Image (tube, rainbow, N blue to C red; front, top):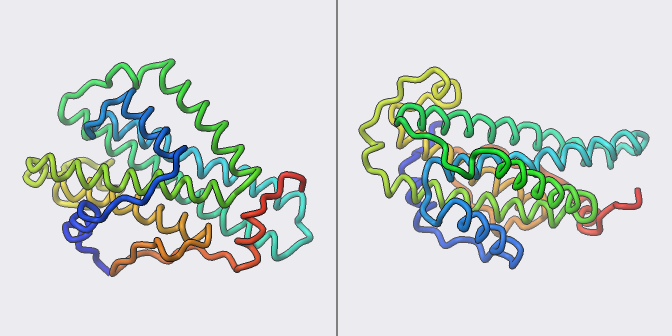
Length: 241
């Protein structure tokens, strides 16, 4: 089923942001200090460099649990749901990074200082530590923080399209971009990235048992599902297992 990207981008732009936690607000404030408050293509690249890290943390943690508790069918099933979704999502975030890089090359834009080492490495390492600790000690908090991150990203992309009307007339003639999403204009490519971020937000809310915050739309993908016991166990954490 085809999705009305313009409609969903307007929905994203007009929808109030999730009420972010203190730690999420601090995280976004640091990003603004480094990359500026204005959403630019380089800042979007920074978002995508960080975006795949939580999914890798989930995959690593859940694979360890599956290996340790391979005899426990229910636990393995829940871990597989999380792990498989994490694998798919980190691939999708990497595609976003490639697409944004192609757009910057097309526009003749160079990476700013914060995309040169050691700055990205420092930010990535800090985020790795943060996400892995959450994945180990409270996976539900990991899901919720990721939902906050993805809500933030969705709104940033919606704002970017609003601020760049010239993208509506810029055709896509790039095999890398078409491999990600076969759209006619760069505006729709960025809209598609923004909608992917909503999908990731929705999935994260579903995984942490907060379905009331899911933003549904016609043509949206199926959400990963954990049963009530799985969500309860995730809320408690499993550091000792």
